[in-house]
Length: 586
Image (cartoon, rainbow, N blue to C red; front, side, top):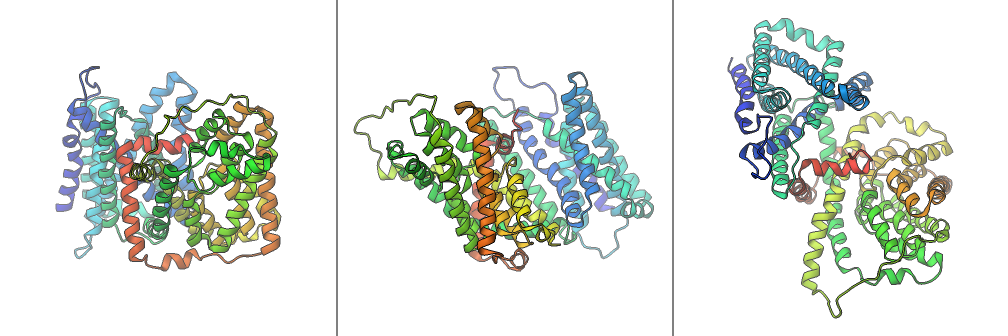
């Protein structure tokens, strides 16, 4: 009975926490941010982290590990059907959103009843982890239901929704064993809850109180940190989850992140130093020599920077506007997202030194050849802009060091952190799926061609692709196919091709795409022919190792940088880095 009362109290805490954010009408324009708006922004950040995180951990790791694709299809259906309906008709958009909310609430009612039944059937000497997890996850659920229903309908509807959830919990508790026995054996119920989870994610993501200023973004970011803390508390309390489910996924993620952290910290420091101490006359230096020499200079400048395609696109346009030769600028366009210091240092522990050297050499060669063959035949349509630099101005070393630290731990982290988190997460998620070794059964040349084409439309930055390809290689994929994916994935996507087309014409964009794929396939086949199967670090053995003190300390520092970026930018802006790179920005 104590756990039932605690679960109901946690559910009721939602309206108490969100009192200032419950009304649908904000302050009048020009009146300043009211306390309710401040509370709303913080709670939005909390809900945006906690609810999708709980749903993801509940369904995705176990479904991928067990190959239960029906659950993933149901989850995606619940997420995407409302999106398609809203975009198909403005008239039905609001109604679809409302019905998605109702569908999500119905699933929460079922889930509340099952929680109540599970609490009623706990044996006397049972561990406290499960009831504690039930109580903890009720807090973000209560906040989310109150915010979503109160904004979409009104306060009374929010109170009614929470009351129904409380009654369902009590009803499940009173039903006891009968309802608890139904849950584990009902595949239809699991699919229904997965579809409901997708609908809830849709509703949560589309509910927004936009953070307009720096202060408001910080409040949203701090709310996200609180949501993450609640999610961690639920995970720790539910530590007896199955090894192939959430617990196994989190264990793999922890090991991969700790293994990568020292390299990433060093890379961020080096990137800041390069940005602060790179000579201002680099544009003139790139103009020297013919097309091959210019492409080589652009490649040398571009390779060390850990900047993804979304960041290199404006840099490329700026280089062209400032008068950089197209051969050098295009080599820079390819080399910069292909391989940065972070990707090099990340490749050594995850891919091994041999594959890392082959990756570096292939990326450099492809950037040089694309810059020469494609960029060398382009005449820039933009006029170079004259540089206006104050005569005699030379920043001190201390000023440059401050700039380096600000850039390396600020701007570079902002651009790369979301992609690194995504890459590590995907690698940790798909590792059980790849253990069967089916990648090794692909024909020798076909696998290179397939993965080169797979990387062509897929946006992945070099750092985030590294752990993913490490998982592929460790489970049977040929090194040439992995490197082909690492060549086309970071450097070819819709935004890059659109930029090349707008600046140099459609023929140049088509030539760029064709040459990239051709060189990636050629390089992959040549690597497989010359080197055959290369030994790579075993991810399975890596997962069994306990991270060293240095790795754990580095992970704490890296996590601090990532959390600082979320607080500084706000959660939606932080995640927006992925939306922009994937072409999903509004």
